[in-house]
Length: 208
Image 1 (cartoon, one colour):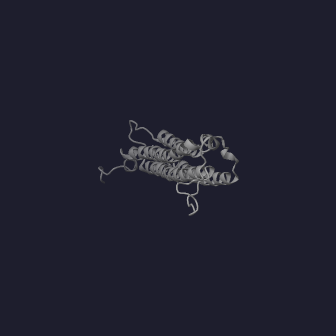
Image 2 (cartoon, rainbow, N blue to C red; image 1 turned 45 degrees about the vertical axis):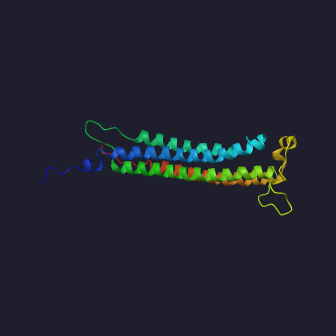
Image 3 (cartoon, one colour; image 1 turned 120 degrees about the vertical axis):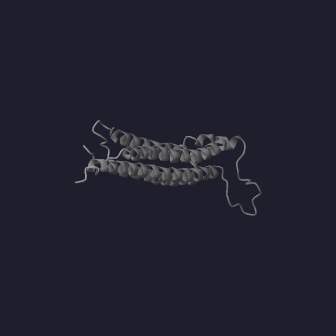
């Protein structure tokens, strides 16, 4: 009988198993924050750009920024749950298995990559959506006819453009509602990833 053969507990629970779990924590938090930051960046630039012409529309168009910031919270929740599930080594040996480590890694990647994709989608939709709402409020046409003067002469100037109520246009409200629906379904991508990540993170095996 070979006494030098490793025990089943040693095979399932090596010393590097905890590295897999902490990689899952880093993936969930970092990738989700990356997507949140890019979504905030893309949508925030458009809000500031539109707010120069129509300051009253800033608070209305800040919704993409808020939805992009929520994605980082999803990664934070999953990261905290995974971090608390990683067991410390004991005097008898390591009790954290590679099965649990791979499950936590998959959980972190699922949440992080879903948050990254959702953040990019929210940023792009928010960027073009906020600009479209601003263009409609300014009566700007992206495809002027030959009769119109060069430089978009339909853009209102002076105090009249500032006093004008942005929310009074039916067409603009339709654009805003369409943008909001696209943002909601984009946010749902990150929520789907977080739900699956929470389920996968509960798959554990201990070498006690």
